[in-house]
Amino acid sequence: MKIAIVKLSALGDIVHSMIVLQIIKKYNPEILIDWVVEDSYKELLEFHPDINKVFTVRIRKAKKKKSLNILFKELKKIRRLDSYDLVIDMQGLIKSAFISKLIPSKKTLGFDKNSIREKAASIFYDKSFNIKYDENIVNRNVKLIKFALDLPFDLNELNTKLPFLFSIHRYTIQELSKTKKNILLIPGASKTSKRYPAQSFARIAHSLDANFLVLWGNADEESIANEIQYSNPSAHICPKLSIAKLVFLISQVDLVIGSDTGPTHFAWALNIPSITLFGSTPGYRNSYETEINKIIESESKVDPYNLNRNDFSIKTIQVNEVVKIANYLLTVSI
Image (cartoon, rainbow, N blue to C red; front, top):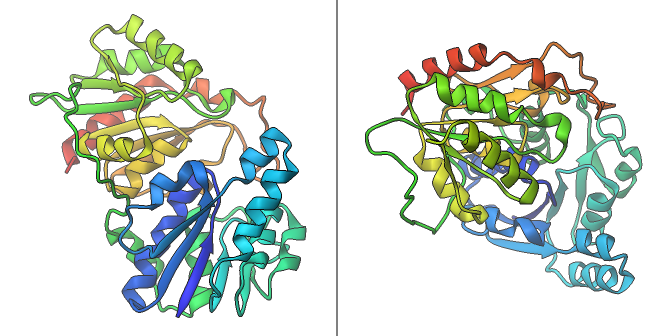
């Protein structure tokens, strides 16, 4: 059997979807799995041993440049893919559903109209699956795959999952300490309402006896990293990293502390202890909590159907609460 999974973006969403690869292979190792993703995220998937082929699209680029020429070329490329027994849209957007329908296949499958925000996407599927939109994102993905492939997977098995991010990049990380625990701080996020204050991160670094590294991905986030280092000169600012190098870095640290953003979720995927901070987004939905992967939510009541970008309640999360959990996780660090 040959299937294609469509999950185009974004970084954290793709990570939360990739857990299904080991589930599929555990119960049906003969299935060939291809993956369709936005070009900028290819590096996250291309080293995964359970993926047969990664196919990329540039829909974001076409939209950004307002180029119909790029769009038509990408859609034409999709139409030329080999035929599949099943195409599974794990994203539930109109664009991902349309792409899924364009891929030659015997059947397309995705979430039904009551399970996604862009309800019109469901018209492109031959078969659909119903699950509450506000249910945990990992559970949604796993249950969709169980339904699609009739797998006997039990959700409790998630507690014994194997790490599932891979990188061929092995490099010397100058910022790592050989004598202290290494903690990676991830202060950046796609929206300002999701960012924990730089000064709060600096206070965390002052409160823990550890070696701190600070991650950044763009000029705005680099400015935040510099602010943290200014308040705590012993913190090391990481160089700008590729996705593959970031995977390797996170696999080497003892603890990750960050907001609801893709790189923070890498820790869960790699079985590395983490604390994810939530304010304007729902922690119970957007992160999978384990014995070593903890979440802290502000007291804000978040509606996952209608996120409030003016909700800056993440700032109210107390530093001492983060430090307390960090101290605990450092004792169970593997």
